[in-house]
Image (tube, rainbow, N blue to C red):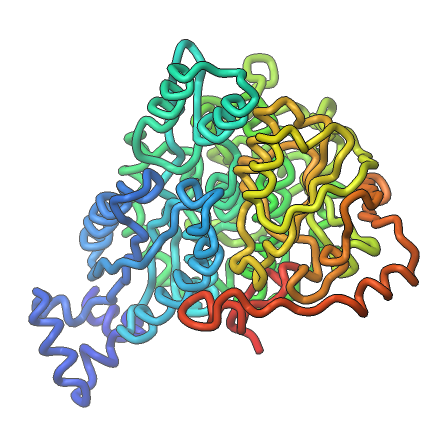
Length: 566
Ligand code: FES
């Protein structure tokens, strides 16, 4: 009975290979990989793992994929694991490897799309762990529009050294302390050796945890997927439950088009704002929306930031780690609180087959007497979101600032221009970064970098040198979710395209105003035009290979750096 139902209803795609006589070699090969005659009647689910050994965010994902497969098989489906790539943001930050990080998002999307479409899988489960893995996977799911679930690999546990809790950012900030002579060689080594205790994604509300929380809020992963740490028993249990959830999606033919909607994108961005998430979420949700055929603009993201308070005292600007969230009810408890206060759409469908509101009926409540991680709406860290879209003559098509309020809302200073992030480190070592300066890092955009590198190393070094509240930093590159301080990234148009950031001179006055949301270079229009007339576009830094292709295809950061649109 089930077999007959599956044959006629659930193996919508794989039946091309298993049922149609015109593909004998495909069927022969499926027998070759171990499928039985009975299996030929079942739907096939591709399980895409970004597992690989060389990065703590990814080292355990192939193991989790095996649990996912067990759950899939136990639900009467065929699970077939395949792999795609990942690039470690933590390991490439501050070096040229970072050029490949953002391009890896689109390679992940392209490769999952390619395998699932070519192999005729009826659904896809993605098992992902590091920053670009998550949006890449969701972009593929949106493009394919077949029943899909994302499993997050989970956050890392914190490291410990001399009574201090540590994470990846501790390692970066130790370098700034070393340059400033604020840490002994022994303690420097102690921090480096103990920051990262094992499997899991970087432990604050950095990009991976931001995207995991918001994708869960969008409905594409099971409740608590973003809250179970990588080594928590709940993570394995979640993987085993995927089979039943996927079967339900197949039976009801619920696809990403039913789940990724304007309302669910608003839910995702609301959670980003409430939790104080990474600025990278802007880039990635612009791209996810485009993959889903939904128009989302920077101004719409600003509108969400205008009405959602910043509530969570999580790193990088706050005190707590993602691992602490589970104890207070996890992301579902935060969502429930936001929903009860009219800040989330409850009627959005999710991969449980239920709506957000129905899922939240089972979620725990936040207890504001006993927990101090998430503040009540009556006493937020900041009354509006920390992500602000700034425009002005220095960023005519927009830029993205991370303003938690702790740094102030206004910065007026003189430009210190660096053509590469390494120049910031050199200047710090020489004592040339001075209070009152706006450090301008340019040629770091999607084309000019290429790859729109994250500026975690310079911002951490500035913090470690004790200049975090005395200098600002603007760039056409990006920031890691780990960055804090007075920072503006995604400045567009980028320097490579002749944007005004290319025309800044040392000593120019720059104002960053988060209240009026303006980024202003204080030179006359005539001076700006004169400088532009003298500007010459540099040669592309790469013409061949992945980065050459990326430079030719990538759109502006204000359009999500997508690569698959003409
Ligand atoms: Fe993977 Fe930070 S390096 S989440």
